[in-house]
Amino acid sequence: MRILAAGFALVVPLVAQTILVTKGAADFQVYQRDDSGLAAITLEGKALVADGKPVEARLLSDRSPLSGFDWRPVAKVSKGVWAAKLERVPTGGPYKLEVRVPGTPDLSSADHLLVGDLWILAGQSNMEGYGNLANLPAPRPTISSFDMTDQWVEARDPLHRLVDAADRVHWQRNAQGQPEKLEGSRLEKWMAARRKGAGLGMPFAITMTERTGVPIGLVPCAHGGTSMDQWSPALKDKGGDSLYGGMIRRFQAVGGKVKGVLWYQGESDANPQAAPLFADKFKALIAAIRSDFGQPDLPFYYVQIGRYVSSGPAGPWNAVQEAQRLAEESIPNTGMVTCADCNLDDGIHVGTEDLWTLGVRLANLAAGGMKRGPRPVSARFENGMLTITFREVNRRLVPARRISGFAIVGVDGLPLPLIYHARVHATRPDTVELLVQGKLPDGARLMYGYGRDPMVNLVDEAGMACPVFGPMQITLR
Image: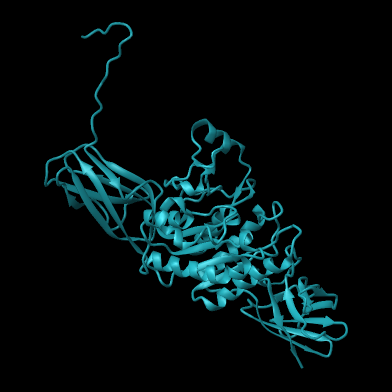
């Protein structure tokens, strides 16, 4: 027996693992399924065995081999490395992957793998999430997140964490104006002090999984306070030093295919300079994403900007909202929901409670089988009554009486005190009647949700809200 002098320790060499998975499978990873509901898991690894030795793999579901995926040869070792592909893995999970070289004692494994749908979360602060971190939903076993440090994790709020993200564009600026990543005790202190960060990603994912049973992987990419120019596709070549480039990089990191994009942005462009350019930039952004993703029909669902408790001109704010509404009509495979009727947790950020409202509305679009919610078709004035017809109404419009949010505006764009009663038509559930005192002045038009902080309440029986719209031409009979 060897005795060591005081102050020395016996160093025991670590025994190297016979086989390792180095790429392609990590705990909580989600794989995008194809149109048949199947996915391929592509793996790379190392093995400390002789060339030609077989590599076997299996998938477990609830501790038992998944049908058709018990131990089977998937690769052979060549110069210490191997590569394999497990094809036609069905939608579902969580699965456990195990890999081995037969006759050796070691296993390499990845736990909690899911096959389902991946969704990009992008935009500015209301997508990043600024709701109060209170009464948050519990994690779900079928929802994961590719967090901003490029790690697959169990999804939970807050989904976005910019200060130590993999992409430098998200970092805080130091005293010298340079991006600086928070680490160590500074990061721990920042995380401990965080009181805001609830977003709509978790409510959306929970609603989707409850309805469809399909696992969800969320890919957070949003950044508060950012404009369309900061999201410009022209900055793609800057990679992680740009928002668009960072999003493309993360898209590729999760497999290069996703189910769709959820977008919430526009507040930073609701000013006199940027608002007139918003429509073209928004259309170009969607086209660029679809081109760079290689998915020309990629679903793109977005939120119309909502309330802002502030002073300032209404025109640019309403102009961005109208551009967003019209984009849905002209760009295929897009859909919009509104949050003009939502409660806030501060002057501009949607509150945690109504983030659920938004999440459900977006899930209504993504899951299909439901109309988008009331969209205006026409406004006709005759004998003191302005009649507004809507399409895309689920069953009927509500409330039946005391509808808030409509305004008649003059040629100067300012509202006129003319409407004294608003109601749903007695026999046409897709029609609203506005009772107006006197005659309409020349050039008068209709708006719904005028101003930065309107009081609006028109929805349909599925809870899909009427978007802010207008100014809209009024037909005189």
